[in-house]
Amino acid sequence: MLNKTYSLFFALLLILSGCASGADHNASKEKKKDELILAIGSEPETGFDPTLGWGQYGSPLFQSTLLKRDNKLEITYDLASDYDISDDGLIWTVNIRDDVTFSDGTKLTAEDVQFTFDTAKESGSILDLTVLEQIEAADETTVKFHLKQANSTFIHFLITLGIVPKHAYGDRYAENPIGSGPYMLVQWDKGQQVIVEANPYYYDKKPYFKRVTFLFLNEDAAFAAAKAGEVDVAAIPSAFSKKEVNRMRLEDIQSVDNRGIMFPYKESGEKTEVGLPIGNDVTADIAIRKAINVAINRQSLVDGILEGYGTPGYSAADGLPWWNEETTFEDGDMEAAKKILALAGWRDENKDGILEKGRLTAEFPLLYPANDVTRQSLAITVADMLKPLGINITVEGKSWDEIEKLMHSNAVMMGWGSHDPIEIYNLYHGKMAGIEYYNSGFYSNSVVNEYLDLALHAKTEQEAIDYWKKAQWDGVTGLSALGDSPWAWLVNIDHLYLVAEKLDIGEQGIQPHGHGWPITDNLINWKWDEN
Image (cartoon, rainbow, N blue to C red):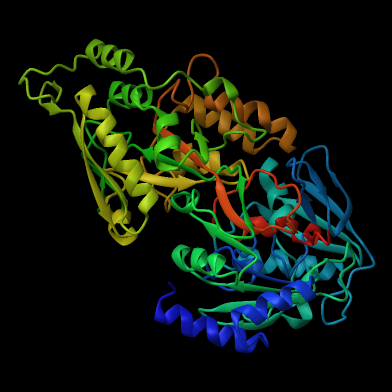
């Protein structure tokens, strides 16, 4: 049964869509195969402005990008016709197509690209473009990016930053986006839905579906809408994966949307500039961190909590080109974990089931965001797994505001996952310690820092890959569980969608973190099976 609030909302939606009832809607879908209704994610908090971060975890939809990744994560062209990097890596020259117009019919030129990157650089948003010294529109179809120093991850901005029109950009652009992407926004009922239509000026493959409605529903409501036959695609949690829904199939899409435990790396005693405590004497012991990594049975977490829809997690980049596959290891080995602790001097002197080492007791809190059921379940299950090891973890759900004040001195159940290797740099480089949610455990290793710097300042992504891998493990040291173990990565969560039987969503690649609408990255390839 749908709750009253949801029923009223959906009745209104059906009226807005020109449908008198759910039955009428289903009949309409049989006749009109060029419209879709999706419930695949939350409403973007800052709207649809790429210079504020829209499109970082999926297609910007309304805007085009210079480059893009295909479903194999290979880099291909979008607005760009080609690009070149100078020998010193400081100048990126991008040539753009001359046949592209915005959805208002105005031609897109290099000046719009320059304006977009300048605006993003000054926006103060999540986009860090401080590496840019200058952007130059050399002529109508040529853009030159001058970098302060070579930066292999700069290419990610060419892949994800949607180009906005200089002539039509203003304070309300996020609510009324104009772009050169495959779709254009026609209606936004905040808190409820967004309706988009195919952009008649789009220069590339024309979308099969001419109109798409995005509903902003929580997971329960999205599943209820799928059962009622009112949506064509619904994102669902693994808890609903075993429930069959008439005329819909379950799509299980691999992701690098990971969950793991961030450990405070330093001993206690220090404070941040604003007075927040840093460090934890128990998790500062490498034996504790390594034993936890070895003892946790990741496959059982996948099977028990994710209903089998996921993979064991060993890094922040499992399966991506810059992942070091050598960093996987045999886990779930309680005896090996006990030996690690015993060799480090941890003993159960009090015979109470909890280990001690000098003045320390092997116990610490593990924080998770209180509204996240999956992270709660992972935290509780891990705590139970580690009790036989003699480590006592107290699981505590808190708001993110509370976690922000405690995350430098307490273990936290975090979640990341990006198609940009800069995430590895941000999570592990000593320079990033205490900056936002990144290296909140204050991890630092001079050898790892050097590898990360070499990777970041390589001239191309391909040149950088070897350094990203060595930072994880070079045979002696590294940021992975084989090395310093500053994290215990647990699982990569598959993204699950209920999809209408006749809807073909094309071949999906490894999806990033669930922010945004990553499944729409190939929306122009979706089609309806007429047979």
